[in-house]
Image 1 (cartoon, rainbow, N blue to C red):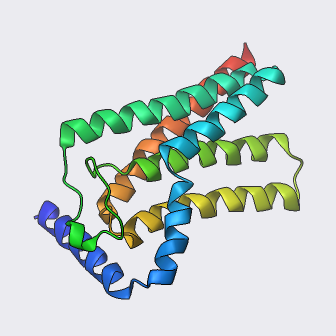
Image 2: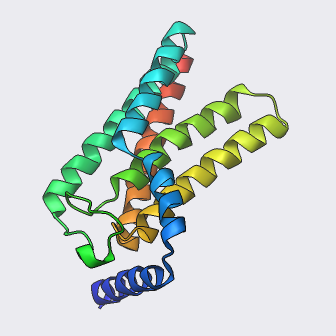
Length: 183
């Protein structure tokens, strides 16, 4: 019964967003969705990792490695095990290959931008800069997830569980970083 409800909810969200789709907005969301792509996430994570090494912030370096690499591995594993097909190509604003569940873009964006938000929160003094950077990270995470729905390449449950996977790995990465800090 619960599965049937979730499948119906996924279908309703997909159909509603498809009915509202606008070609101009599609282009904006294609750009936004790239903020969660493997290439973008990998590039930013690599640059951040190198910066953390140069600054001798080894605990955060270990944390970002665990968070991002762990999320990529977990998503890849789950996609292959669950093997959920993507929404029908008729709904897709552009053709996306591979399995649908969980959303890698959602998981990767929560993992990386969430880690950046935690870093900003911990290393910047209380004030508008810290608040704005944290809000920006949260906005990017939300927009990347929504972009996947708007573009018709994922179901709502894919996004939700992508966030769960990214959130768990973010928590593990931050926890390990905190342990390393105390050593």
